Length: 371
Image 1: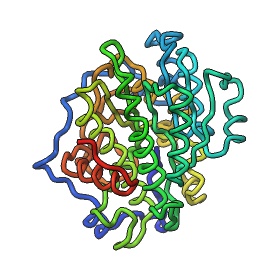
Image 2: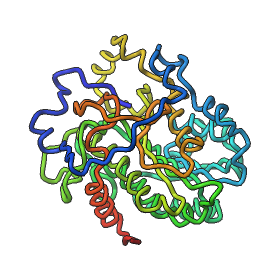
Image 3: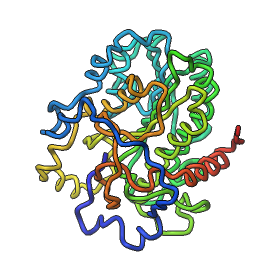
């Protein structure tokens, strides 16, 4: 979802940083099987910029014949006051499902979701991803409003490329805390409801919105997730948090797939949204001059398509544990450590690191393992 840095001031990753943060252990690399051709592949091969022939989230709903088909189901979506979160909610509102939409600023979200909110069916829940206590409170509200029934959890909220090291209210590095830990805690608190809601006819799903920027970095070592022992780098930090999104989904699939709870992660594509607010304006100006890059950009409506496909597509019934992009499955990229990269990085499937991150995340949010 990110542009490649083009100025010398944003030479975000050096050989030293790559050595410290990015390794691919091929002996434990377990990639999914080669993908079949997506019905949307041709449209993505001929990208012509936002609003072109690539699918929108609404088209996915139509193609999946999902209008009105999820009545009685409950969908939770985080980060719905801007960007693709709005369009994800707009599309899924057509399914008839009950939507519980989290946002930090309810006034902003109410304005952004004008015409989508519907009392009793599509409602806002206050949640600040910088505060674990806020996440806990939000989970309580969600369970109360849903009668302990959750079918789909979409972890969409996020921040990107903070130029300076900042910390959450609980003392975690901001991008790691907001993008990963808050969502990990929310999942753990909603997990009993997700498991209980799974049925042979409709498995429960978790969708983690990651990014091609996971190619920049794997996760740091235990005791260094918050850059305690190395110099902070904005893109390495973001890359770590996006890899964590993938690892979390993979581990959910490994732990709970046999119980009818499945998870995927995805790259939504390059979209010019508020997520880029912390980027150097000079880089944004350069981006707008790059014709080839502009052609690859998506509108927010198109950017939400892969999320909706992962959430309700028949392709993912009773399946998970994969990193998706462009409404399709992906193959391994070239491990170039760049923000904009095709496919998944060599470190994207790593059972040892996935298990380690899970264990460490439980400790950081103060929970015990159930296995």
